[in-house]
Image (cartoon, rainbow, N blue to C red; front, side, top):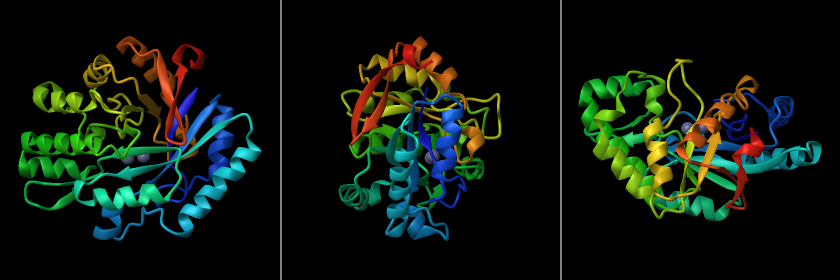
Length: 274
Ligand SMILES: [Zn+2]
Ligand SMILES: [Zn+2]
């Protein structure tokens, strides 16, 4: 089994150590894992949170992963990060990635600039933002942000598309064909793949991200890069839901899932993983 989206204690939102995550990964039968700690340039500028991987944080994180590779030879461990994409910080993100030797880089829309010109978090705050601006306007900005993240060419895979459904489970994507088509078009001929993220937020029976229609449509573009991840921030979530999404991916046509080393995809047979 494989899990390519795991957070550890370099970020303020996780207390899990790299070692504890590896122990759990072995226990639940994972063979391939990737750590994807946050690096958020907007966070550094706009809030009191610290989700940056600058300076010693990067070095501590890298050292912990190198140590884990020695202690868990049965695991293939990839060293990655999850970047919050915002178009206005594209150059700074590129500079950061040029200076750091990650195996895998996830691109995510965690912040976006709303129609009132203010940046806000794509989180439970989406509920208030949608009320204020309307769902149509919100979705338009969100889809454009996702397209920008794909077109930037900075990322190996785009994470949890539609993550606001973690907080708004009744959101109906079938009203947004144009926006979803724009995203699908961007994936066509792109070297950036799509992630299926198994975290279902507060609604255990809710959706994973992205919506299933989008995964199917991206497969049909011929873009072969699919990654899967639990978005675990604590040990109980490592590897959670992966078998189910890999089975779902097969129904979309995928036979292989990607694992990255030195920013290059290694395609693994789904049948051999589940
Ligand atoms: Zn994220
Ligand atoms: Zn994440």
